Length: 502
Image (cartoon, rainbow, N blue to C red; front, side, top):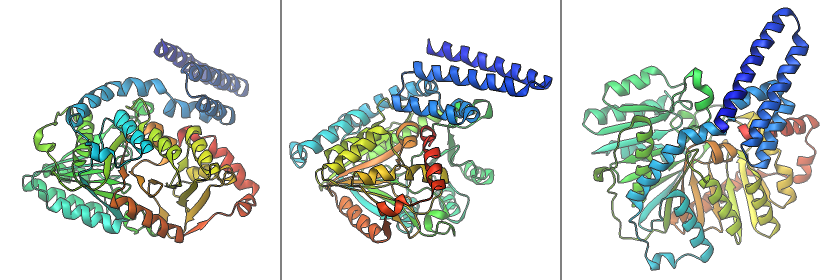
């Protein structure tokens, strides 16, 4: 029924456009244009209303139409149509759920392992398993890789040691020094007979040169674009991007985290300077989860079914390293998994919540949970960059600062370069590290993947890195922040209206 209503509204708007064009030709511009804008806003507002969205999201869209009557229409056409998401990814959701249950459903957790956790932590991991179809592993080694200077040498070393297969999935790949170094390794490995599959996001890599891709293809690397964008269908595809960064080598070793492939992640960009980021090395049982995520994304684009033992036999480690759980979220997920796990982490905190994110556009659930935690006496801190890379998002993020600080939340701005880490730590023992920002785009629109850690050495390293980052940051003084100019305040409020798109 909703689809037919969408079609009718689309036809009405198309007719209105023709009518508008005719009247502009006749010189009746102002009155006709006003009618067109009014009709479009009413029709699309009605459509959003009957979709039964979250009330705050509905209100945000209506405010966008009110403030940006013309741009609002085009924003909605490009970014706002929920039914497209549901229709397009429903099949992927069903197929992925079957695959994860087949691959991961047999993993058994011992009572000894479960008894290491408190009741609230058990509840979180049960929630993660239920929503993400991926059980917790206590036989997985992890290592935090701080910044590109640790991450790229570790990835390059592992790539060079590959014997059977290499699987890569990235949002951004640059045709620059580090990008070409990795390209050359993949070409050499493909010539040696190693299977190499490379999945890149079509929008994130829109600047990646054709010659870069052709060099890989000629060498035998299987390279595919995730959700290619074609102009006639731009509204269907541009919004749901694959923001994941995954490397799996021989099914034994994996990498996941915040760094894409590019020189700026090594601090070589003059504007950003030092690039502060966090990645994770993974060895053992949880690599199978990362592998399954990649293989299902690959299947979605290529139709190739690869859930085979040679890809799904990780190294079995006898030692206990703490809990590790790989969780995905995306438009193919009914429950906005990572957002709900963030929410569960925040409300379960007893002592502290430390959040690092380059972008902070929370929805009402996360915002309320953070404020309530702080008002309850929990040490809540938010670490963000002082220097923006996306000015609209930067100013929209800062619009939330006054109410956060009023609730007692401490906000730190990283001053030694650009802060791009995506890390949440609760009570110094439960952590999340991955690709998901603390924003609506990551919560509702992007394909993301995070590693959730419990009492691992990596968790301790993340805490130590946070403490170091605080020393390189300046805490925002609430009184000083109130004195920012009226122009800046207006910009913050204006860009906050665009929250559904950010």
